[in-house]
Image 1: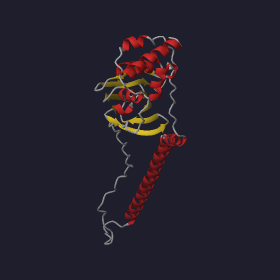
Image 2: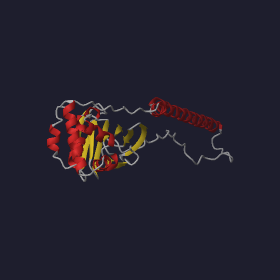
Image 3: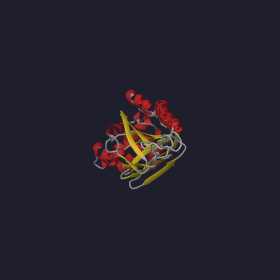
Image 4: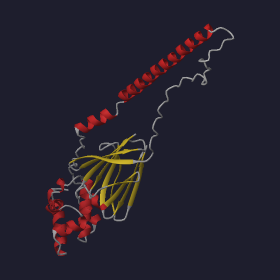
Length: 283
């Protein structure tokens, strides 16, 4: 579709809006689409919309809001090229990366355990050696006493020799199977979370109003799982095994309730425009 055709499409939608006596702000409230995108549609500048999928969703929502047949309207833009949305990869602060690297250095922890066991072993050897030396001295004094003569000051030891005690091993803490979802950082419109205590990612979304989303596994550039617009009251659930991360892009976060392995993910802190959510599985 050329520039002239897109302008004709924009004029059609604008005329339908004006016939209903609606302002762009009214269409924005009905469709939850930002006003600048609505203006771009009416002016025929569909190339600035965030990708073909979102352009079709915006035009369809606009057509429905002004009472036009969305299928007829969408047919007019099926061959229109669109720019791909630019999504920033969330950046983890360097200080946090250094802290995480320091926390997971098994060599330091192992060195401390081995040092403690070695010290305990030396103490045991000293205790055993002192006990054997005392026993040898006691046996030598008993051999020098004449037979039949009992020393009033000498008494039989009441307590047998205590066996040496091996150092007790510290039991390993049992791994918790309870999922824990932790908020890590925010970079622009990207929010990063860490999931621990589980072996797979279980994601649930419940829409209170219309909302579009795109879900991928293994990060932003990984395999696409699903990309669709959710109607109000609809529920979507996924179980993603064999992956270490999930990437979710949502058009209107405040219109959807998200749970990760039964843990609520707070979307009230996010803006009303499209947001990116990264969930990293830490085992």
